[in-house]
Image (cartoon, rainbow, N blue to C red; front, side, top):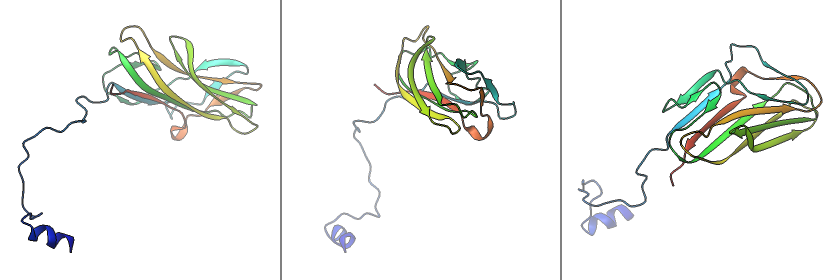
Length: 165
């Protein structure tokens, strides 16, 4: 009924219309650089010692739009704000399992899983990069027992992308 009313008032939705204007509020650039990586599932689980921070080895690159990810480290050469994330899963029944993103070797964002199950955690946030020397890496920490970072099924993912400012 509504379609027939529009057509009766001289606007036929089956017609094509030329657009000659501008659209405001649309992005003018892509949200790149962007990257995503996971440990190599063909390699054995990465061992973790109790009460020790360990950098997670990300051996499989899923996405790297500008070749700024290498050796488990993201070093963007374009300054700005980025949304970055890290999800980690460990095989220990330790009472504490921390996942963290470290910027320039200092903890920037972190999450902790407390419990007696296999540890897992997710952390993410907006990180400001200077475009020259700033970098981030994924780290984990186990509390009271030894364990491993699980490799299979993309349990551990590390990624990020530049946000539009």
